[in-house]
Image (cartoon, rainbow, N blue to C red; front, top):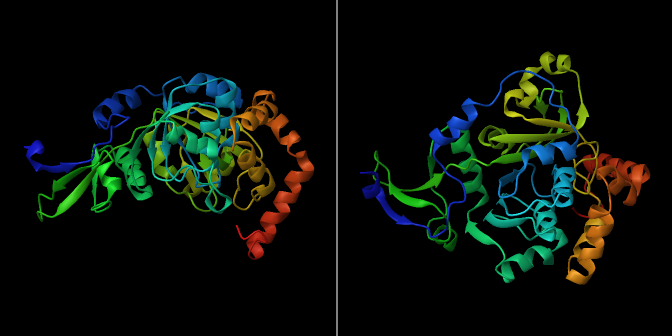
Length: 337
């Protein structure tokens, strides 16, 4: 009967299984013990990200991205990763430059918004080195919502009449109540999610200031969750106002204390994006002959994210970016970003 309801379908391949019962088999065995999950980024990436995994990245654009963990993925040489390209900018640029990904559910990638296009990211598509399934940002967000709800798909009225639908993995169905056309968007259960937050306790209860985008659902959809946090706070602070906890401890597998962990991206209310360094990235990834020395200097040649920050100007530069964020809150930023 379900097959009869499908009247059209996209040609894209699904990279994850939308079956909620299979996902529940994993979640059923996941510990809900409230214990410390503190570890460094190197440990978290080594323990919870395996070659071939499908990865979801939190944040939005260059805002609140888990840069420290993405760098560590490259240092450890992780390969054949799948990625949800949901509002992906510098995060996609990093993984593309390091050759870590081979498939992507794409809504927004390659571009770094007003900053320009990443040539390294674009080369993946031009040279057919990555498999693609297309969606809109809303469609990817709702796929996470379906997974968080524990259902195999969610109906929506998006992408009709577009090539985005044609190259997606969605299916056109008839509503059983109204007979209207709908698209069935399959649930998206990532193997691992990496989310940078403003504050977290040692157990993984995490708070985010400002826009949360899809991170509420991503954390509940992913089988494993790595949290990187600007600040560690006592559990007692979490208990004072539990309504501020966007991600609860039982979703989380690792908590990493990484001040400035979104650099060179923007961390709302904390520090502004380093536009100079992002321009340096774009200039360097324009050609493989300049990209590899750049990666060697800033990622492969550094032992951790702290060394990377020092190369980029250290505390002096980071304090300047904090001041810029304060100015940005007061009015438009002089860069126009």
